[in-house]
Amino acid sequence: MKLVFLKFRSSFPTTGESRKERLNNMSSKSSIVNREYTQAFRTRSYVEMCTKVQSQLGRISINRSLSSPSLSDTHLSESLLEPGRETLANMIKTLNIHHLLVDYFLVSSDACDVCELLLRAIHQTHANYQSIGRAIELAEIVSEDASHKEEQNRLICRELSLFASLTNPLSAITWVQFQGMHDRCMALFHELKSKHKKMRRRMKMFKACKRVGGLGLIIFSSTITAAALVVAIHSTVGILAVLGLVASCCARTCDRKGKSIRSSSYPEKSSPTGVCASLDIAAKGMYVLINDMDTVSRLAGRLHDEVEHGRWRAGMAARNCTRMGEIMWEVLKEFHAHTACFLEQLKELEEHIYFCLVTMNRSRRLVVEEILISQSMS
Image (cartoon, rainbow, N blue to C red):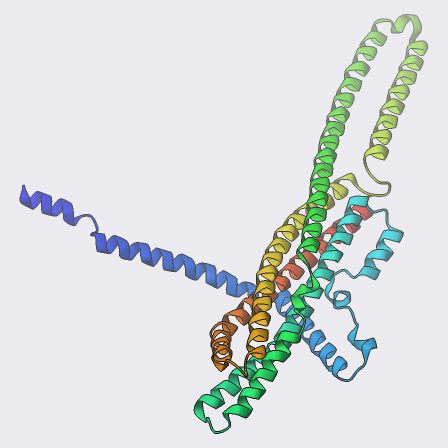
């Protein structure tokens, strides 16, 4: 019995082995997620978006330093948004686009403007935190060589005071604005979804009516033909005339009903199937945009509070640096410990904005392609 029990027990993995396997499975899953996340960063559209934004922001910084406001006030969204505003304006003038699709383009354009403001705010936040970096470097010099401590302390206080006096760049977009955009996007998403369902239902009903009407016409024609054969001896010419008249009336009635359904349900000069597909793509794109902007708003709000806390601490240290030097050093220690983490979170926000713009442009391009296809099919 002991041997049997030992064999039975040895056929199952031990507790340590099962735990090891679970850890290996978890590590393999996390490595897969990390690999997919890394591959997303390496996509061509993402890299192009990063390069475009960074080059534009760098050019704006140079223009501001050279005091050329006409160049520094250039809107990033004009180069980031695809298709651009002018292209869409021409399409709206020349093509008969569904009004909900026009609203989709306008709302996504406004979202791009918000992303532009946030990217500018991130760029300016990096510039503002250079004062903190200089203060930390001066503190490290003092810790190594205390011969010029008073002068270095004065320079540190000046850098902290400068940082505290700068406006929080992330205040450019308030929570109320984010909430307003969320409400607009959510309302448009429900409208797109509802309209898409109604159009699909009408298209199915129209196809069903067309099939039933065709079947009824065949049965009616067969009945008339049979009756005509029975009484063909009496009035062949009259029956044929009546049959032709009835068939033409049925055809005209079906044609009028079909035209009325088309004209009442869909815009002119556009394929119903294409319009329905465009609404579906726009609804899906709006759903993704809502989730992306919600994430961006949460990250931006958290970083805004971090900047405000840092400004308050820096201002307190700068005001009391002559009387209580230990407060200044405590503040510098806190900045030294948390600045790297803050900048990493700032980078995360910037990357998510890039993803949001790339996804938004992809959705807009798909909608435009579907609109052009539906126009060509009409």
